[in-house]
Length: 283
Image (tube, rainbow, N blue to C red; front, side):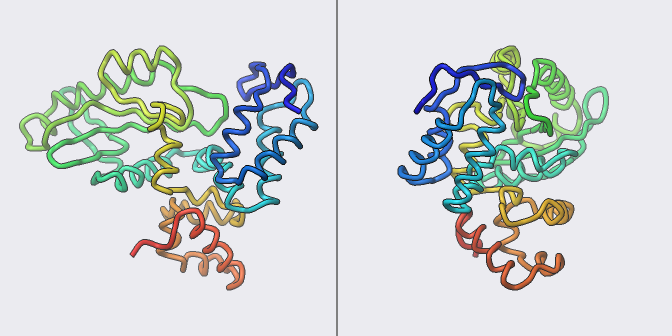
């Protein structure tokens, strides 16, 4: 039952028509098999009511996926897991740095550059050969908040000051590439238009199509520890405070679970959860 006429409410408060197609697509991204997807779509179709929120739909789908298989549920909650990296935004910067490392870049976080006018602290600095890319991360811990045009305007102004300053110009830093702005939410249409016009690279949860944040995470299997359905909120915070941001990092350093007093049985289940999501630990 598709309930095509029913309206649901997004986190922004906006009402939209329920889309079975969108729900099915998001469930398929979790890796769930066709039978599981069909069953969940049918169940939610029966339970849907006018004014139901997208969060309620997501939570119900998550519960049904978890009942089927934990790894399905973990992948499905990826977007929420990124929100859980907050509220400071620092783990998000570390996460973006790790994502770029696996794409062939050498990265540093929170590095200072002297601009022509003032000094600037850059969230992520990425090198690839003789090229240098300056990346600013805009993290939102609240659902429904988007990046307006003011963000790329501000970042572009800083970028131009750094480009004209002694830290880059004539300092043998390499070829300075266009600045990046990365967010875990969305850019407004004006922000995207300014980014395109100014030559900046804008990366968000769903932009650019096919190479967005969610696509890069799935492609490299670089899932944050916050996707876990076995770790508690306290345990996730403990790991984040020790800069264990990725599931792969935890697989390389499982002793952190001993620091938390996790039992051997539960430790084994957590390791298996991340091995299923990320693959075996890096050699």
